[in-house]
Image 1 (cartoon, rainbow, N blue to C red):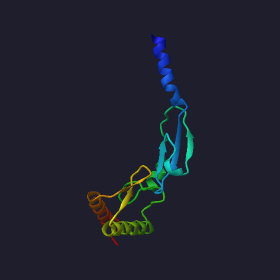
Image 2: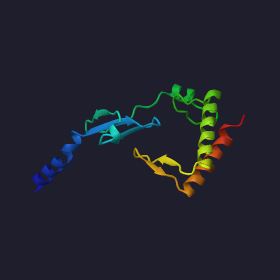
Image 3: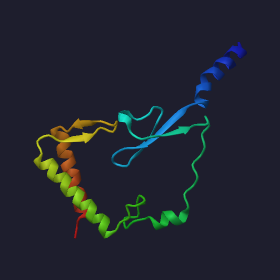
Image 4: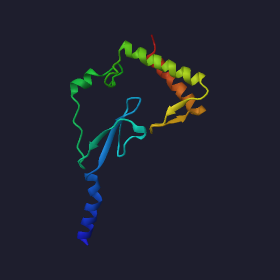
Length: 140
């Protein structure tokens, strides 16, 4: 009985040791990992997995301190809190508000490589979010 159980366990875990993972970036620059290639013929990278889990390496303390912004939160690489980046953010927020307020049909990325049409409740929520972000970041 124990041999059958051990054999069943080994057979069920074996595919994990030879698993294939895929890595790609979407149009917004977000990196995705999945066990299937991305839809739509996007460029992707094959990642061979070893079947073991490893703890991530700790980030150096110096880079964490250097990338902290005025609010005390970490800024993403390339998105430092500079006047030029704030201006870009404000310009994008204004464009988003203009589209949300003036366009009859608005679509958004559904997070799965496709788009979905925005309903009135989502539209109002996005308008409030954009206005709140403009209050935070676009004070000149």
